[in-house]
Length: 397
Image 1: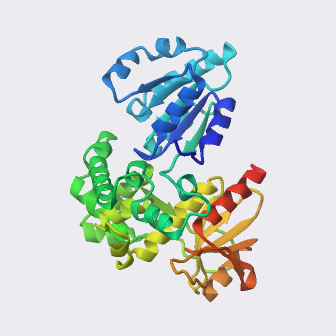
Image 2: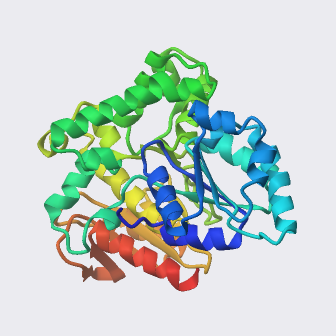
């Protein structure tokens, strides 16, 4: 199994909290990570709550879970049984009184809105939350990986079965099936009554608009639905961790700030599948190439420093930064992302760095080596930037 960013944190949280919620999109590797923890412990129990056999074992959940004292219980697809959270609270407290303070439950789910609301309401003070993304570059590539390897991950995206596919055609076929499964099965199973064709059109439109400011009125007009309906549809895709709404930076700098969020399809491989782009050549000849690369890099960097607050910065006067990372220790990094192998920044980036009080300025591009340029800007590739963010966060976490 490839090492994952959250693996170390998962062990820490299981040693500290009675329950840990591990969220992530379907097929991102949650079950694989949980089964690795099960194998490490030796006495854990795993239940997939989509299976009728597992559901039958949970006919009397209180009795069943109390019978598993001193064992880690892993409950997969836990969003299928939302009523279970009320039972878990009582079971956790009983096991606590028996001296079992931590590591009681590992809950896996793929719908953040449903799952986290239930967890926060029913298990307040008893649960920690972690997000598992699809593979990121630092998880599957060596630090000195050549450009073609990084390009391959960008083209295919990070879902394990897409990344590990035999060839580009097989990878694209898997992603197309993944999209169809979400539209035809997973989203309806969560309850929202959304026409499949309308949601596919919206998802595809968002892929075309990768990295653009979210304009719900424009999308609503194109789909012939209300702005409120578009907002609800996008909420569903965000809850499933398929879409990211990157918020605008907020602060009092005396400037007219853009307030609308940017919107990204979170996995670059899904972006390319929605647009029917199979190869690197087809992507590079498409207008989405630059925005797709930007979204790909943003996902790498946010995953590497998930405890940082991520946003973008833009003013009506042209100051702009693709990514602003605000850390708990007060530092702020501003990051510009370019697809060019000879990247340069605009005047707007310098203005943005000054406005937000940047303590570090990065220019992330597909370059072979890290090097400095004027005004304290460091040019580096996404792998190096992600590694530095992780090291920085580990130093004060």
